[in-house]
Length: 556
Image (cartoon, rainbow, N blue to C red; front, side):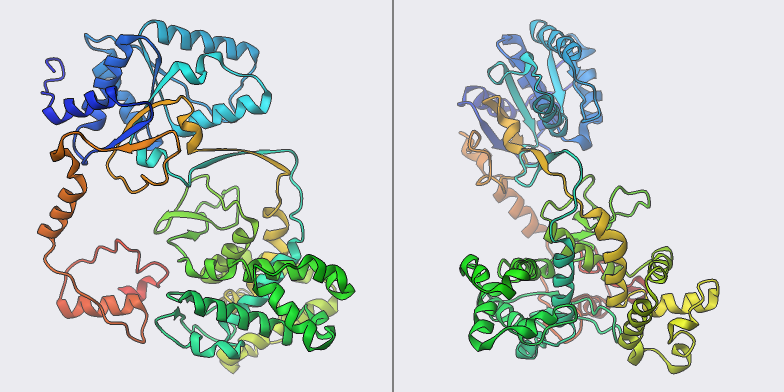
């Protein structure tokens, strides 16, 4: 208190004292600004290090590691406390052999004997853990029973979705990759272009679906908004029915299905997850031959991947990385609006394929990508490139003025060196669904969907292996999803239990009013902006990301 020129408040002392006395594996909730990082964590470290029973390990988020290091160096190391502070950064590229392991064990033993503490991030810890399993060499100084883990912001550190993956082996082509891609693309075309007539009543409901007609052949930014479970089942069943009875291009084998009974059975197989399909496929040679197509359709429809991905918001839940030198051109998870989650990828290959298709359809092909697509088309046989290009033109023909279309309506007229013609083609074709699908199937999916045969995976559960875990969090939202070794405890002091209540009180006392916006035929973001203009507000803080995906000139 004297050196840091502060006074420990009674609630801070009560919280630290309770954590020290509680059973192993306890986290407690405190309001933001209660001094968790700058007061209570140093209090815990000093007391636990003084006992010298176990090695103390502080777990912090990567975003605050440098700030925490600087503060603890000032308050713990360069102070009368003279508590040694050790760090252990680690990633897969770090060298770990028998010699390195001996050095690390000596450093950890020195840290423990001198009453020091270790500060790490969850990524460093799990990366070191996976590396030990990968090479089968283990650190003795990090055995489970010899460490006390202090979690700063335990709700974020123990996030249930956190995973660290080590890929093992040599990359291999995704099994049935072409079938998965073409099935999803065919289903998406059926759904977005209104070809599934039995579901037109659902597709025309503005409260259930959002779409924006940008022109013939272009993706209409279709998204599922709100649909009941029964309506989802009916929509999936109708899509499956239309897919089987009206086969899209590439699935002409469906026309050979023999009889109404086989058609109904096939529809049930690809739309009902409870249906057993093994004997059905084996018993009919045609179905066994095209087994990969059937199973791909079953995955997207019966198991809900198609509708699940259409419920997500492009630019908010998923999208493409912004860097040109990114290691992947597939869609990745987003942590917020226009904010890709660093080093994160979708682990399910079908979900990754679906989100990648949707991302490029929303964004359209860049000039370089479109030029590459034309080069790939030019490398095909003469009949293939003429028929493929004719398909592109037919899809966009209704939305392109005749005088413009006449400049590139035949493949023989295409001249990539003609900049004026190329710019016109890019403007009219870069968001055509068939063009985007061609680019993805030829340039992206054959490379970026390759899978490793084995993986080592660590999660937030591996962060509580030490058995003795204590921590703080500003929220208790994930209290039901905590690892089984950890539990959310209540404050003994009744006044300190009011964390959520105080936050609700602040929100209510500072809120001038709540405006319920009526649903209209226009897009949600347009309705919000109309209300803003009516109220003459000067600023709109888009916390929900409602403006994501809309053109900036439309918003302005």
